[in-house]
Image (tube, rainbow, N blue to C red; front, side, top):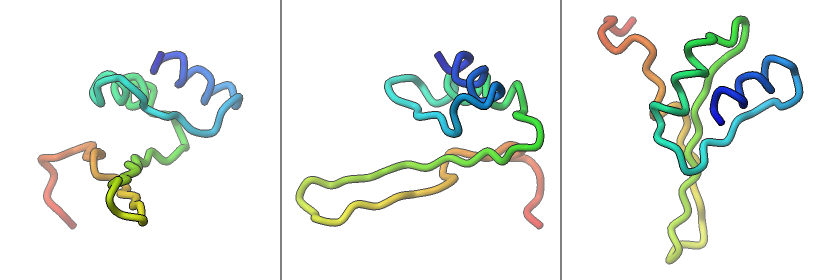
Length: 72
């Protein structure tokens, strides 16, 4: 399904992909393999704790294209 999602992005039929019940590596592999040329890749996680009224978003927690490169 992740590969189909990339196809839909490339055709311009959708603007975003939602991960759902799939391992992160299986989800990101086709996205990064196609490089989505000229497009930014960003990851967002939605957190909702049932006892709290407020929810949170965390962005780019799972994106590290080149983990061995030094920080600049």
